[in-house]
Each structure stands twice: as structure tokens, then as C-alpha cells.
Amino acid sequence: MGRDLTADDFVTGLLAALACRGVRVISIRGEEFYQAMEHAYRALEAAAAERLVEPRFAVFLDPIHGDSPVVREAISTVVLRDLASLDNPEYQDLRLKMVEGQADLLLNTLPGGSALYEHIAEAFVMWYPYIAGDVAEGLESCRPAELMAELPLL
View: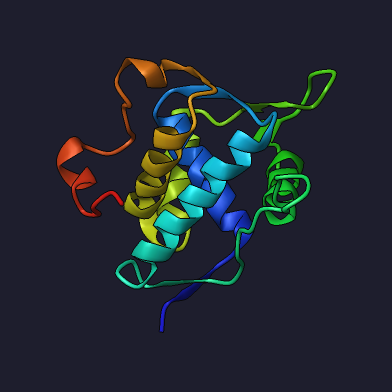
């Protein structure tokens, strides 16, 4: 039996892993963002047993609006914890406030460890191009490359 993993853990870990890769802004405008989050969740489900975690939530897209209430609420929690902000007029650009050291610390304290969230981040960026920062220049990580091979991509 693994450690419980909440939706807040999932989104915090994903954003921390993206921050380690140089991402600073993520557009959450439109259905594509939520589709990418659903793909990241599927990567979590596939890796959960190996990483000894049990997701205590599910990401499903609303058939009418194309979004996910679970993801929206978890983003609100991240904003309330001051790890990111939605400080633009339309609240559609998520600006990460985590610096690399803070992101690395978060990754090492969340259930599943940093390799899990870096795996999830990889699945997310494969499906979602609307991010800004250094990620397009090489997908750097807080962890050495040889440790990234712990989990296969889906």
C-alpha cells in the first residue's frame, strides 16, 4: 500500500518539475491545457504502483466545457500557497513563482519523489506547447539525466 497522493500534490509536483525545466508561464486558456493535464494524470496512473503512491482523485474532462474541476481547484490551491499567480486581467496565464531550489525541495517532499513528477511533466510537455521559459531549449531538470531514466514514458 502506497502513500496517498492528492490532486494538490499532483499539480504542485507537476508545476515544480516544470519550474525546474525553466518554465515560467503556462497558458491555461482553452481545452488543450486540460487535455494535457489529463494525459499527465494518465502518466501518473501508469507509474503509481511503481512509485508506491495511490492517487486519491481522478482527472476527467467536462464534456460540455472541456475543463476539469479537480485541476481548477488544485491550481487555486497552488495560487493560494503563493507558488504561482494568475495575475493577468483574464486569469488565463499561470505564472510560476517557484525558484529552482524551492521547486527541487518540493519535488523531494511530495509523495512519489521527484522522478515521478518529472515523468508527469514530460508527459505534459509532449501534449502542450503553450508554455514560456527555457523549456523549449532542452528540457533541463533539477535532477541529473541518468536519474531521469527511472520511469519510461507512455
